[in-house]
Image (cartoon, rainbow, N blue to C red):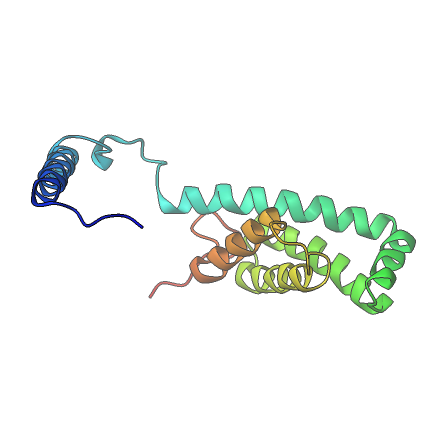
Length: 166
């Protein structure tokens, strides 16, 4: 059992804590007062709409690859879903949502609806394919979070269907 700290040890701990806090405070003040990530000096295309475009392209590529792969081998897809105890209609719906949702997200048409469908698929993956496997599903979790981000933010300015002005 550890012994109680002596008065000298407590003073030393307080001194170290004080030094750490002052160093962190100085670092924080430096970052806020300096030109660290001064957004006025960034190129014009560094904005939320461009970030959403990059997110949409990456998410769409992943789901299009998987959706088209399922559609081109529906016998294998239905067989895999059967192993999971899911009917063939779920395999068809998953393949169609992944493909059509990927297209919708890529071009920015019905982005929120597509992102909702793909997020539901990722939840389904967690509760079927990844169920009972601790420390697995990081990729699926990232896809779920990315789709939730698109669901909340929308497609952005670079989309076929532009967001409505508020």
